[in-house]
Amino acid sequence: MKPIADMKAGTQIDALVAVKVLGWTPVTGDWWPHAVNSGQFNCPLDKADGFAHVYSEGGLLMPDGKTYCSKKAYNWRPSERIEDAWEVVTASNAVFELFWNPIRKKWAAKFMGSGEFSIGETAPLAICRAALTFVNAIEPIL
Image (cartoon, rainbow, N blue to C red; front, side, top):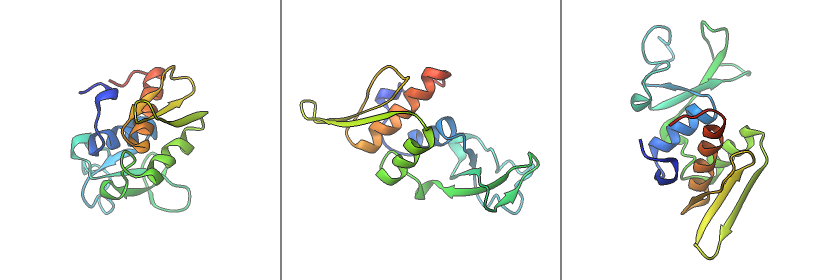
């Protein structure tokens, strides 16, 4: 796997953010009707086409006692869409900085506690790299 600073915008970094930063569960296919023991809930990350997350306002009750709903991966792209990237920022509950570096002509983002700024060609990519760097500082993921 590439170092976080070298990851490009797209499905690989989006999946890592969903699972490692937000704690979502990878799912594939039509997992709702047969979620238990089907291999579609908590599937391998490279097979995921969506992510399930705990949801308190309805959804599917799983054996762990939690209720889940899901988002399709093609509708949730935090490394490309600022509204999805901002969901990552607000879920972190951490102090966050984001600014445009006019000298490098790139965005810089940092969650306090990660120790360094993450750079990206776009604000969403910088945010995703910063989020992964932040959780990696707490518990190494790569």
